[in-house]
Length: 332
Length: 306
Image 1 (tube, rainbow over the protein chains, first blue to last red):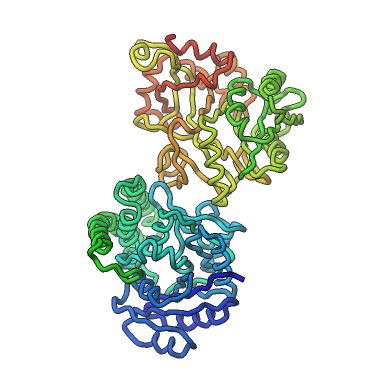
Image 2 (image 1 turned 180 degrees about the horizontal axis):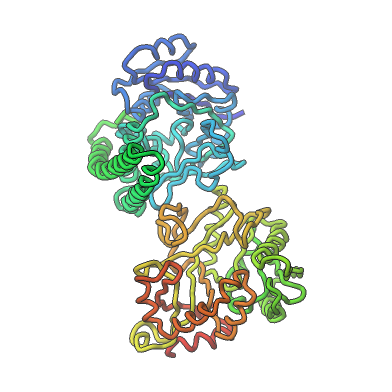
């Protein structure tokens, strides 16, 4: 049996049915959590009703609404008492030994965080990407592959927000959870992980701690894709500058990485002509517009990232100044 | 702790000594694979005894295990024979090892400690092959009016494959370290999950896409020196007959260009601007004293001023 105990925090926005299923799966854990905190940023009270019906689950509100997942995590963190805090997405259904598997890895005291697999139901997702699980590449990109099963635990640089856990003391040591990753909330989960890595903690990915990750209802469509591209680059610049600093070679290399991605996207314009010939003018035009708008979203995101990063770093400094009142684990 | 072994295909004595010496201290065992009839993958004679003598002379710790076999199967394509010989050697070298080094005999590790660190990293990250960058050297370049006035007089000049605008280019002939049990598909290739090292954070190999992932960055003098065509003319003429790529190498145009470029290195360097990606070469001076045996020294003396 693991010697440590865990609490679970579930940030959610407007998905009461998913929260109900998620809580049902948590009730079946072989090692029960000390407490479960659901942090709700939705406008209605349906989620509150779902949580009230569940036994012993703590309900907290995040008044910031949509796009404030990191802030929700921080609100949840303030309520937990266990040595380890596990974060679970509302659309992630934990398998019965999920928490047990996560906790086993904390026997090594150098481990500051443990994440597990999030299965999306894609054929073959367990079988590839082993060398690229959870890496921060020298060019500034983050790799995923959090469904891969290399047959053993792997040391990683960051974890997936849907299924990750941290030593509570380690979170406190690095100054709590950073907010300030708006929009689609991309990269917010990597902020804490990268700061822990910089402090010297190890992060471990274990394919044995599994959640079944169902896609969200609103996460689709071209509009979502453009927002995803914009906030992906914007929040990425913020992440690198805040966690590694402006002088880090990785931060300095990222603009070139982003330009390569934009150039790769531009090459897709060459597919417009064959599409036009095969499917007509409308389809060809749709391809051109799609490529151009995605390029614009990526470029604007990159540019918007720099003032946002400067502002966040200034705000981080103000909060950590000796005269400022420091509240570990409070939202940014 | 990761245990390493290696295999070496004994067939070409050029740079062999330097190559094996560069990783000898890293490995517990080296499988020396050679054709029992001293024939190449195309059936032409190979200087195998000379290679075996060189290996025996440097094997001071009795790490080498000799494995003769029949690899000149004339009813197979030379590349299939190449792959087959490597697979036999890899299987033998993989017993009791975590990783197997598969360097060719004209590839020399510049910083074995950096290479070993990359293998450890790859092991930690569940990769099953390490792609380690090589600087691909095409030929030596003799003293010219230009080289007389620049650089150091005691260092040889080489023509090295480069990117457009003379930037450094890594070449990856395949993973140079793999886990035992890897099934090779073509020559050294076969590992699926590759840990990729490069000289820059953004891919520098013209045969990979610009966004190919790079897992670790090393310095320009920490990779592999691949003395690919750095041999004397008589030997190169023979080599074209036994390589796995023999049909490609044996074109008279290739040998003719190779000679011409060595004679006109500045024109070769200028041609980088319009040459295709496999024919861009830049002039570089390299410190290779540590790698040079008697045979190589004769060749390199023609490209220095001292």
